[in-house]
Length: 256
Ligand code: MF3
Ligand code: CO
Image (cartoon, rainbow, N blue to C red; front, side):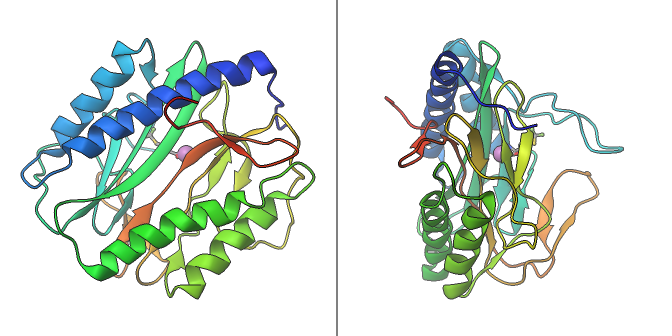
């Protein structure tokens, strides 16, 4: 079942989204050569808690045999796609890092991700980050009440592939609200089943994961970190949005 949120619930998600965005902003400011990913995790967790929210990723149950996720952020460097575990890794000039984080405010979730450049990066890496971000905006251009989820999927995929990159197929966006992961699934690629129609008051996390090379991914032995099969770079861009009869409203921004 896809839940429709009341105005009151959306207000709480706005607050959760704002705190999530603030955490990402603080982390982004700290992304410099020489920083340890555990330090970025600490900044996010402190920002979320100081603002009266709870980091939703910390302790999130693992799939199958995996241990609960240990961090407030996923810190995925270079060929790591998602679910990188923050720790002793030190970022170096030329790396890219995808940071995904989430906050729960009075029972409601915000979820967002950005890919940051560490110092000077290659032109190709910069293009990957830019195309991933723009694919999100192409996708939400279709996120209007009455349209189908599949229209978001197709718009993301089309833009990414037109630019010579590929979309990850093993992980998808999702509904969000009182749970981090709710129905519906939001693939970043066209699927035969057109999926449900969007309605005003649905809240969704749209999150293109884009690889420089092929779309294939695999999971490392830590049972969390997902990497590109071919070792190529990957970028991620995610926001929590609310569907209206006009343009979708992005909740994971500052001062909304
Ligand atoms: N935020 C991720 C998503 O977009 C999920 C994070 S998994 C966790 O669905 F374990 F880190 F929480
Ligand atoms: Co998400």
